[in-house]
Length: 345
Length: 164
Picture 1 (tube, rainbow over the protein chains, first blue to last red):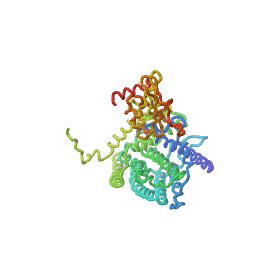
Picture 2 (picture 1 turned 90 degrees about the vertical axis):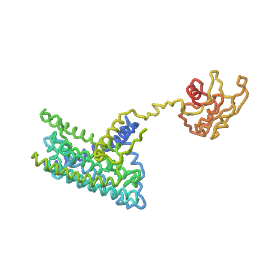
Picture 3 (picture 1 turned 180 degrees about the vertical axis):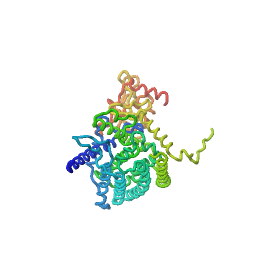
Picture 4 (picture 1 turned 90 degrees about the horizontal axis):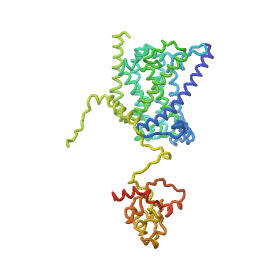
């Protein structure tokens, strides 16, 4: 492969990933509304198109037609920058997450990951930490106390939960001995999912990702009853849509990360697919399907939890973050280390 | 009856949240598969029970005459003054009938006082709830709109006899 082919394939992969992600986001919003309706014995949006499948497009169209209001007291540049940061972070993080094994196409072996970086997990952690800036900027630059409170809460929350998130990943890295997402997936194989080996780490990681994505029960930055809309109170039109999109894109990334790190990535459990001697492309398709199935379940889980659990109080949130999640993730590292020592994994 | 005491301290299982969270999740998952309350309105319509107070209507007997004797009690009791009655004589047994009977549906508050006060069971609340007009004149319902055959109002009349 020469340099142009590499760039071409990378661009192709980026385009595919971004379009599929935008589509998934719009349908995620639709499913969020449907599932919330079902959980409350309602029907949900079912008018636009068959069973409401065109609803997300109608929503986006409505948002596009809205007036873009910037408050008088706002710092305009930062106010505009914030949703851009949020979107940037949400879409670039996906670059390192593998969705399947290498695909053989036109005689090339193409890894199904935009960038096979050898420190991919660090990249993810770094970018998700950048996401705090989007919310803090939005809250600070809006010139509104609700936004400011939302932004402050969010930065405190994200910093606290990032620690337990990082330490939970520590356990995974001990087992895989690599920061490369593909290597982490390979190290888990069919059955030795990290979720089974280190259940405590799995739970702390899932809880931390809920906090990181600002989803209920940790959606204090938004907290509709107290803060109107939290950090995006003063946003309207496409800037609001940017935050909205970023939130759902973050959900997708969070579930993709959970699948990659803890649920065996694209590996199919129970059936040894290699033994059937299938052509490469069918094999790849099955693996991609497995990955998306696992991800879909986690996305459903995100929505399911949102409509089941009440919001935490702020002090409870901090107590949980520092006094429970942080020690638990440390215990998890010790647990994994002991396992490695005993079984020589 | 023994008063159930509230437990002050959470047990260990409750403190680690996870089983309680799972319980909550199972509950919402169950309710996802329950029958829905929403009706797909224009296609499916809500059929109200007999106790429902919809649009007030005049009872029309089998011979095509209204039951109303134009005593004016309904218009007297009507809190928002929505009913207007003008009486006249008739050769039928009941001697009086309303020449003009109008209900202003913009004013009507569906309180059902007219039906309660009526000595002849001549005005009752129907099950009709789809009331829409595009101007004020249209909202004043005259006799031609108010008269409904008694057969259609039978369950409301039965309800009134039983519970009024």
